[in-house]
Amino acid sequence: MDLGRRPLVRYTDHLAELHQTPINREDIAHVVAAVGEFGGDNRAGIEGTLHRISAIRNRRGEVIGLTLRVGRAVSGTLEGIRDLVQAGHSLLLLGRPGVGKTTRLRESARLLADELGRRVMVVDTSNEIAGDGDLPHPGIGSARRMQVPHPAQQHALMIEAVENHMPEAIIVDEIGNAGDAMAARTIAERGVQLIATAHGNDLHNLVMNPTLADLVGGVQTVTLGDDEARLRGTRKSVNERKAPPTFDAVIELASREELVIHRDTAAAVDRILAGRHPDGTHLGAEPATFARDEEQRPCAPATGPGSRARRPRAAVYAHAVSRDSLERVIRDLALAARTVRHPEQASVVVALQARARDPRLRRAVELSGAEVHTVKRNSTAQIRRALQSAFHIVPGVPREQVEAALREAETAVAKVQDTGDSVALGAHPGALRRLQHQVIVAHRLIADSEGSGPGRHLVIRAP
Image (cartoon, rainbow, N blue to C red; front, side):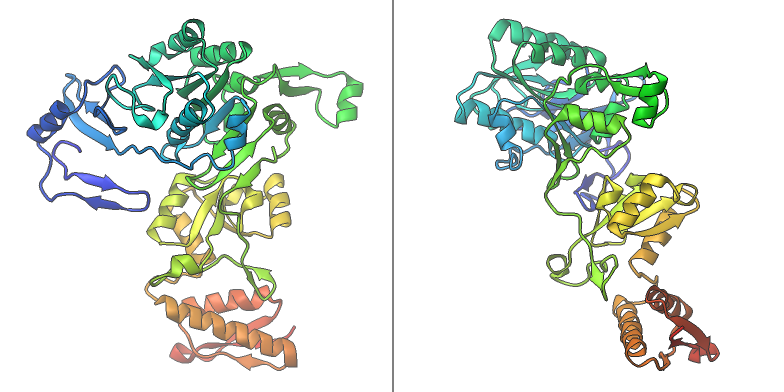
């Protein structure tokens, strides 16, 4: 809700208007009066629920906008990491907002307290985990909760929880500064299980964060002797892990359904610092490959009722281009696709042209067989054109007509390969002929354009 604008509701895959009438000051005042008190971080809640309300203020401190986020306690979200939680390992959850990090923290608290009977303390900044009010939400089970009045005090409350309440496990949301990182290390050194989230999309991102790298052991630069450098095959100055990690395992949440689990944080960090892939265990929707005539192709976008269930989702990797822009275009085009964090997982790569020859990307593409589509600039328009090419989308041409033209080309290719005779295709507009040409060239055949005007068509022949 923003002053002077229509109220909007944002779902995971689309946006909708709630009302045609713009929001006025009375509307905002009505909502503010109905929720709990806003803290120093401009967040409030509704007692007995897990909903979160965040305020936007003007320079005079008046609320002129509100973000109302729906919160739910969801059971069954620990599949894949339940054994780590039960074994008493300290876990760090990473991922962008909205992928379910806090939901998994809440479920971890309930599992440890109710099913395993352990002493659990939730350090609840902004009442994000256990809801607003003095009575914690049932979603954390019988775990106890310490409320944090301001995010700047979170590290002090973490230490207080250990010293005063003798917990066996501590649950913390959003470790975001050096003080929190130091408190987390203190907790781990005292033998208390710690399950927390941190800012950062993946482990590599966290290792490169100078403020939070201490959570996974920190990074230091060391100078090797000539013989050691020659033996390792590296430069004399290299980065190495500075100390044991605070957390035993790191969980990357790529989406609500997809996890990448690094069960040995130390080994994963060492691999990253050595320039190698950390080799986490991928759970959820597997990176897909899509075969057509023994060659990989991205699947077509979902069209029509039930197509989502029939078609797997292509795995798309953004190399030196904006992942947010890529995901936005995927949603706009309604593609049966998802983004992935590593090129080895991809069936389609969208890369900045200047970076398309990066050695790591080339090695990954050789292993996965992914198609690479390049853009000259990191812009939404160029990313859109690249995905339209990758998924055989022709603006203004019905999908059925595109698929019919592709099937025609594939059938003709098979005939040329079997008989060696040339085959003429039907007449099509230039955009469809270009798609047919891509199919023909992929099979190492030759396509010549013949005719003119509306009768222009391709003729396929063997080399």
